[in-house]
Length: 123
View 1 (cartoon, rainbow, N blue to C red):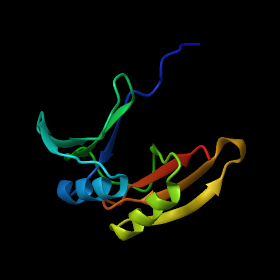
View 2 (view 1 turned 30 degrees about the vertical axis):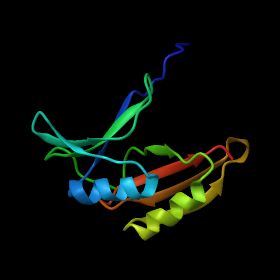
View 3 (view 1 turned 90 degrees about the vertical axis):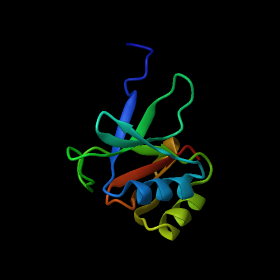
């Protein structure tokens, strides 16, 4: 078995980049900025050196969806705070904080663009 992380990049579709950046910035308390990447508009999530990265993307090939792949954001010990911010900033909680036993808690939400996204907290 490899000791490398199998996931190294993800993209979350946006139809309104300003709205999507504002949503994620306010929910997670970090700044995002748009960049033109080969004809697509992208905005990168913070990424530690050598860690998994990702971005919001606005392009004709990407459509927000409540179906398909699911990205889990690290909620650390602030899941309840993040869920409150999601609702306060144009998103909706679609599955509240739910125990997954010894693995912690998960929750799912619809972001400002209509994507199903999730949170995970180890405690």
